[in-house]
Image (tube, rainbow, N blue to C red):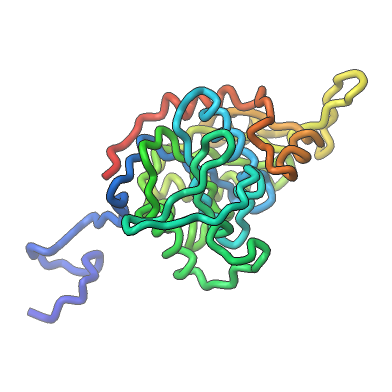
Length: 280
């Protein structure tokens, strides 16, 4: 018998150590408990994943749930700024302790560990992927009801690591009204389907602007095609977020929790109704 290469996918032997299919799911660290994990994803950057993450986390915290945000967008972390968290994350012998926002949301982000939050994170993919795993299994997530993972854009190393390593109970796809929306959504849908992660639905950001005088909706990027795109992939539209200077100002001031969310009610319901897998 030839020496084992430990690559079960290309081996026909039926040995005791064979693991197929092999699970890459990471276990939670000692003292951690997370009931439900939802990934916020997109096929490209700049569409508002962090905004949707922040609004959903804030909404669940306001409803009395213990909520957390795992900021997996290592090279573009905006969650701490959005929530106004400036203190550095501390640690104990058991692991890292997330920083709690004013509204009670537990947050872990690379910007809470850097000496200077404006320093660029110039790391290769495997290093970044390793940090994301550590944010899951080396952070003390205590009695979390809902965790939202702010995913990096695209379908590269880090999104793949999140899909494989963290037991996601579902994902919400965020997109914008431009003509490329179908292709962008298609990439995110394809990756989620390949990884057998349930897709809860789609949220369209920058959907419209509302005239402050007459209340008329102005479609700055042209007519939205989100209903057609959702139907193409058999998905639900969970909300449409407007272009609103008040939302942008609140995020810039670190006050996303002060935003009164009236656009994501269907997304909240979808998260509440998503079946939770067992977390260990």
